[in-house]
Image 1 (cartoon, one colour):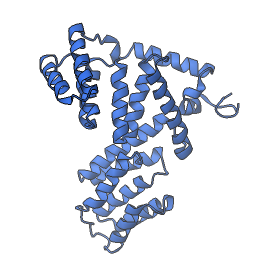
Image 2 (cartoon, helix red, strand yellow):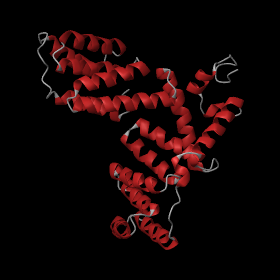
Image 3 (cartoon, helix red, strand yellow):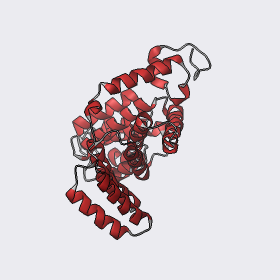
Image 4 (cartoon, helix red, strand yellow):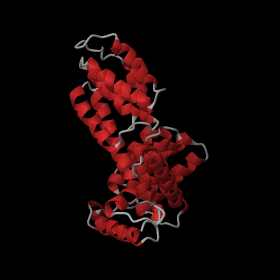
Length: 296
């Protein structure tokens, strides 16, 4: 019987869908954790051995000490030198990523954190700071993925691991309340949305339609998905289909401005007449929505 569902019986498939940190103590949760650990042992990460150099560690610490004191130029000069001389050391890439994050250059910081994690995927601090950088950029899926690695690889007693775990717990509850999806399904939905949106931006409308329909198979209550399907069909000259999708978007969210704006434009067209695909203002609006974690 499920502790999350008021001691009601629940099948294994549903258990896997909704399982989260609140399940600690449950036999099924313990078995799932053990399975994940065994899977990790067999994964690609098993073969990673990180190259370390204590002297370089000290230099990175020195550079970050400059940064913490507000002496960014000195810290960056030292880290640039280390990057040129030791690009294969994960701690150097981590140091530069931390510097860029502290300067507010979050996109640049993620590039360095990703390089760090390519070299040493177990480095929990890099996963955590990567998640923090994505929080500043409001990229919900990547925050979730990063913090999940923190919880997976980190010491449960560490404060930042506990913070990551708490964030995931709160996010799981919020996502389930709003969408009925588990975090895993939400991330899959969001990633699928982003891929489809990239196709839309690239004017590959038929492929984008396939992608957005995959999103609907995971989450039928996202106004943005219906709105973007409406855009795709409008750009293809399929007026009736476009209007139907805009109407579905507005049924979910009557205040959804892009659908209202685009519906008004398409309503003036004839069937077969394509909506101009230089309608950049609306595309930028959708991009903003995705950045705020509303997509998918």
